[in-house]
Image (spheres, rainbow, N blue to C red):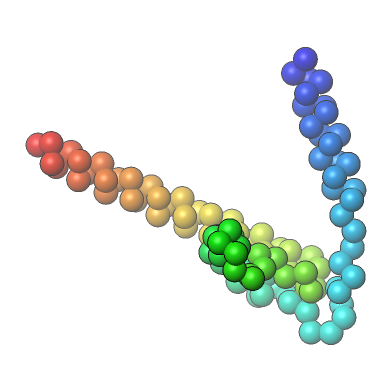
Length: 104
């Protein structure tokens, strides 16, 4: 039964991925490149929070150069996620240290 669910999930993801088409704005003028993708990846968390509260902010630039923009976006998003993880871990460590110092 578990194999059937996993197979169904994979088939659904492949079907949805097939719906994505090429970017019609790609290579039409001054498009966002690698460094723009890197910056958008680094700021993706702030963009997402702004988007949740109704700001007219885009998380991903659709007018881009293609693979280089995607590569920069991926590197920036991974680095941003790691920074958030380590910041959260440091915050939890500070809270635990404060609680243990208050208990002593």
